[in-house]
Amino acid sequence: MKKNRKKNKRKTFMIVSIVVSILFIATGYSLLNDVLNISGSVHTKELITGTQLNIGLISSGTRYTGGTIPSNIKFQNETLNANELTVNFVRANSGNSTYISNLTINFTNNNIVNMVSGASSVQIISGSNFSATSTTLSKTTLIPNEQGSLTVNFTNRNKSSEVMRLRVTMQYTSMSVTQYFYYNININLA
Image 1 (cartoon, one colour):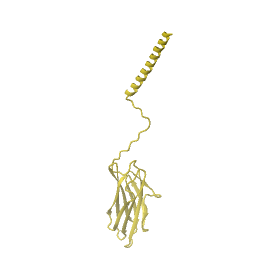
Image 2: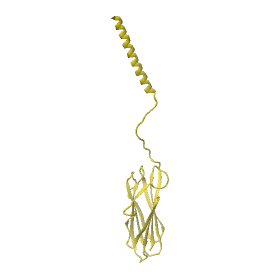
Image 3: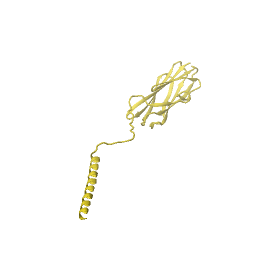
Image 4: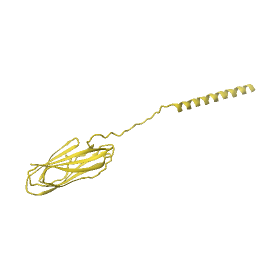
């Protein structure tokens, strides 16, 4: 009996030793294993490059330009080419009246990052009868997919036969890159 007991103790000791050894080996292997498995997806931010402002113009009906313009000035057409929108109007050359106009375009930030430090300016390209020209941005910072608007205010006198042209520049900065959009307003004779 004593012999059987001793044999059982030895057998139990061997089994426990084997189990402990297996646990040490498994733990050591997992600690030394340098493979890391990650499941899921990774998203990176797009790289902002170039000078073209990444916006989506929002149409109001069949055109992008909205706002108020005098009745003697008629919409002719509008052309969007990359980051430049040109709108053409025609007018009758009548009298010495002064007209106030407000034109607006609406747009969306198409970047996946914020557009910041928004600014706009207007330049008279041709026409000596423009005065009181100004621009207004509704928001100087836009988060992704947020909408903003650019409004151009100007006064013109309808006394000469000259073609009147304005060039509005809108700019925002994304990821330290300043980008531009141009809005050209042409008022031609009918």
